[in-house]
Amino acid sequence: MGTKAKGLGSGGALLGFAKLYFLIASYATVLALTRLIDPSTFGSYSAVGRLIAVPNMVIIYTLMFTVSRPLAAEYERGTPSYDAVRGRGFRLAGALGGIVSVTFFVGAPWFARALSEPSLTGPIRIVAPISFIYALYAVNIGTINARRAFPRQAALDILMATAKAGLIIMAAALGLGLTLTLGGFTAASVVAFTVSMLWVRRVRPAASGPATEGAPMTELAGILIIFTLSTNLLLSMDLFILKHFAVDAALKEAVGYYSGAQYVAQVPYSLLNAISLLMFPLIATLHAEGETERVRDYVTQTAKVMVVLLALMATVAAAAAPGIMALLFPPSYGVAADDLRRIVVGYSGYSMTVTVAWILNSSQRSRTALLLVALALGVSAAGAWVGAPKTGSDGVAWAVMSAGGVGALASLVALHHHFGVRLPALWLIKIAAVIAGVYGLGAMWSPASKPLILVKLVMLTLAFCAAVFGVRVVSLAEVKELRRRG
Image 1 (spheres, rainbow, N blue to C red):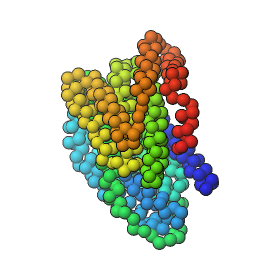
Image 2: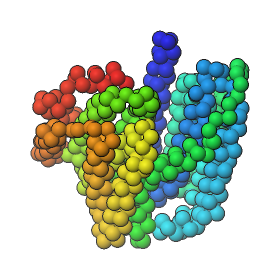
Image 3: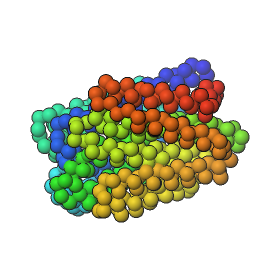
Image 4: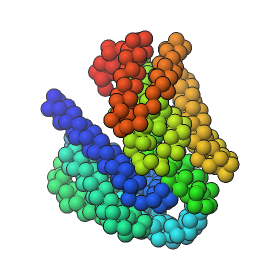
């Protein structure tokens, strides 16, 4: 038992490193592109990238989990249903990925018009095959994950990230245009899938028991499709609407500037995503065993730490928004500093909403989980649709901030209703006071040089941490207890 736990722990560390590497490679690509292509083209790149990312993330999560879960359940018996599950997975992958790829390729002119840029037909078509390739790739990743070959899974993530970043940046540096720059993404997906086909052969088990039919794969897939589609639309709807209303050159440039701020604002969401994946199996197990008290205690401590971490990242980013934009992007992107202040708060609210939704999913409350995400998505879409034509990116940023706040408040209500989680009023007041104090501290100093900007970021982070522990918002004992339970 100890050896197995050790193996799973080291595997988790490898996968965590791979996800961090993927995140770093993605942001390195963004920073490079803002210097290699003009803001208008970068805005178009971001819009097309988001457009293909929405169904791709749905496909990857759906197929990875629908393949991994039944195979992992048979791990101790030698995975006798290996061929049957993979066969069903590939058939589902062909259906999902094929439909999406054909839809993007045939409907590219319509999608381009919806983004107010007919010339995007070619870029959309060149990324259309990715959905089909990713679907097949996800079956292999799910297989490798279920067979606990975590080093191979991590290596594939790193390979994909490296190939994608390298090929996209190279195409942009050579001035090959938007279509071929995005084509680097398609080429990278082919490379990763090819390697995954070679590596998955090495994890094939020798069947040691009778194969089981299991639950219909489409039943689990249907639940995952609806939920992951909603969460990924939540991350992209603001950009889609802003791009839709960008009908002249100045507005198209504004989309590029907003995209830069959006990539920064989504850092808290990306980093907190790991919490969702770690909590899901633990809460699911405790719920299945009927340990209501332990679930409530664990969710309460998780919620407190989550709020503190999101408040830290959002406060520092909002307080130092002009400096962050100057540190990461060309000078012209500085006009999006006010957008960053608002949307980093909004996306932090999204992060809390989606994390709580995963908690609800893990305890078989999928309807409430979907309602939470749909509420935030509805507020964001409605606000952006009204604000974009009137005030451009400013209106969209306010919509995101409002939607994040609504989602966060609704999440707290859901936690209280379903789990009995109570965050004391005094505790919330302390958090608010820390946020106000650190934000005010950031407003007192606006450094111009990049080294001093870094100093300010470190100073604000340390000030927040000192204040949190100083007023006992959270204690080291609580953090250690949360880790022990996890």
